[in-house]
Image 1 (spheres, rainbow, N blue to C red):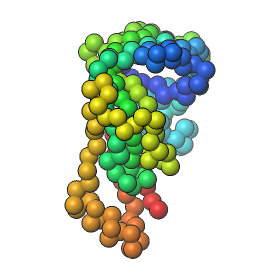
Image 2 (image 1 turned 180 degrees about the vertical axis):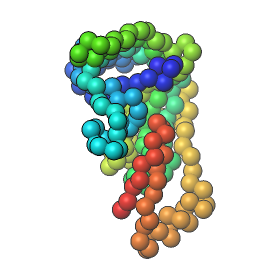
Image 3 (image 1 turned 45 degrees about the vertical axis):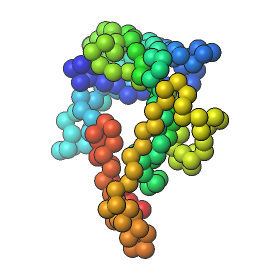
Image 4 (image 1 turned 60 degrees about the vertical axis):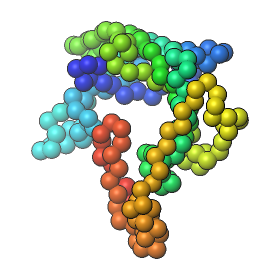
Length: 190
């Protein structure tokens, strides 16, 4: 939301519908359990002297529709060979419009919020991706980069990065801090 509020919920496959021509995707969820935490990540709940916050049980409903913009397909290739890197993924992405509605209410009835949104003042994107052991498995007809104005996006490793990867192959690898898209630092150790 524009004011920075968000709720995270797991979306089951049954809530996602894709049209046969794969140009439109809809997500429909009703009364999905979640919590309101007032901070992210949520603090430990009810730990004396550490957290004055409580996780407030709530339920959220939303409907979202994404529609691909034709002629905007980009082919993404892995920009890292490190299996823990957020840049180690491949796929096809399209610019997309999106719109939807949402509602949230506390289980005890003390708060509720609802609204609508769209991509007119933001951005939308949809596509397919693969990562992990599937990152190097090519999709059918993946060698035809000339299709529908496809653009290839991948970032080659810099010489210093390749040297560091080669050097770290024989030495004990130190802990890494990965900055994911949501700007949440994650400490990774081997």
